[in-house]
Image 1 (tube, one colour):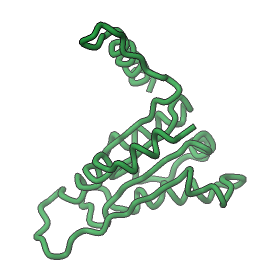
Image 2 (cartoon, rainbow, N blue to C red; image 1 turned 135 degrees about the vertical axis):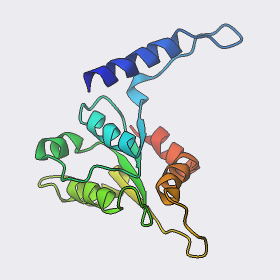
Image 3 (cartoon, helix red, strand yellow; image 1 turned 180 degrees about the horizontal axis):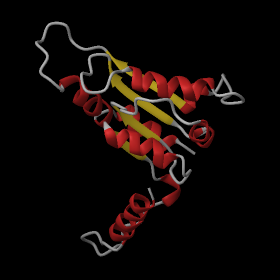
Image 4 (cartoon, helix red, strand yellow; image 1 turned 120 degrees about the vertical axis):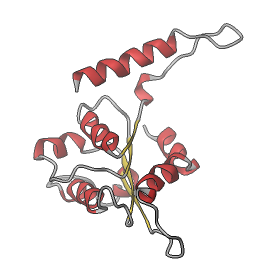
Length: 160
């Protein structure tokens, strides 16, 4: 985990060392950095979020198959997470994201139920019934839907 965090810091520093065509520097508001993870990357994004160094997380086709440790759930409290998963995912069953969301929502002393929609969001995709499914299609579709959603980016930018 520390190597990944170091890499993220290096990437941010590299981006900030670049300039636009007009010569102005690029700046990153480090208080507004969020994570987007797909498949195993979604699992890593949730793990990195436990460091509380990121403002929010979007996961697509989250793949951790076991229960989250209690310490991880405690560290994730209050961190906005939006999960995307397809019921037709043939790589990681939708139950992986179901379990993640349920563990965050059911934590003792956890979220205020009136604000839960601002902190935890879950988009469960229904696969089309008319098309012949190619292997992995629904697994990837969750990431495509999430990454193309203007609502997701508006939500990330609205996080405080």
